[in-house]
Image 1: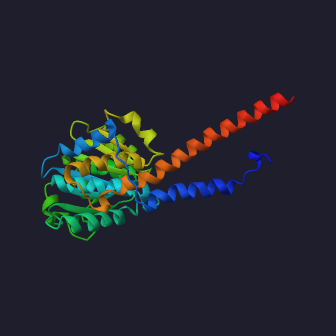
Image 2 (image 1 turned 135 degrees about the vertical axis):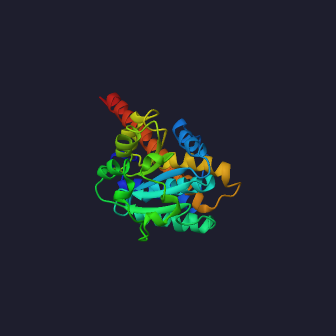
Length: 288
C-alpha cells in the first residue's frame, strides 16, 4: 500500500519541530560562529575605548524582546566593564530601566564589585517623548535628567558633574527593539554630531534591515538578532572570559543552537516537499 503524502497530519511536522528544538536546549549545544564585519565593527568600536571614556548605553527594549536582545545587552555591559569605561544608562522605553537594573545586578554588582555607582556607572532611567528625548539631551542633558532613578541629583554624582549633554560621550551603544530606538539615535544624534560621537547598535532581526543602509557611515557597527549577538559574544569571550566563560556570557551562542536546527529542519522540509510534488506530477504524467 502506497503512503499518501497529501494526507499527512501536520501534527507530525509540529512534533518534528519540537524534537529538533528541544534537543539543543536539553544538551546545551553551542557552535562556534564566524563574526561578520558588522559584528567585528561593534567589537572594535568598544575595544578602541580607553578607561574612563564616557559611553551612553540605551536599553530600548522590553521583556517581549529579551530572547533576542537580552544576550547582546549582557555582552555590551560585560565588554564595557572590562574596558573600564563610564556607563550612562538611559531608555526610551518605559520598561527599559528594569532591563538596565537587571544588567546592573547580574553583571556589574555580581562580577565587578569594584565598580562604584555614581563614579563608574549610573542609571538615568526612562523619559517619555521618544525621539524628542534625544533632541533635548544632545544639547542639554541636565534639563531632562536632573536626577537618576535612585533620586540622586546628578550634581552629586562625580561622573555626571562635567556632563552637559551627550556630545561628551565617546560612543552610543543602543539595544533596540523598534520605535523609538536605533533609527532615532542615528537620525537625531549620530548624524548631526558625527564628528563628536559614534554609534553601534544591537537590534531585533526584523528591525535590522532598516538599519543596514546606515552602515558604515552613520553607524559604526550592528548586531542583527541573536546571530549577531552570538558573533559578538564569541569575540568578547575570546578576549576576556578565558576557556570557560560563565553561562550568562554564553547565552547568545546557546540560543543559536535551537535556531540553527530549526532552520535546517525547515530547509529539509521545503526540499522534501518539492521532491514529493515533482515526483507525483511525473507519475501523473505517465499514467495519462
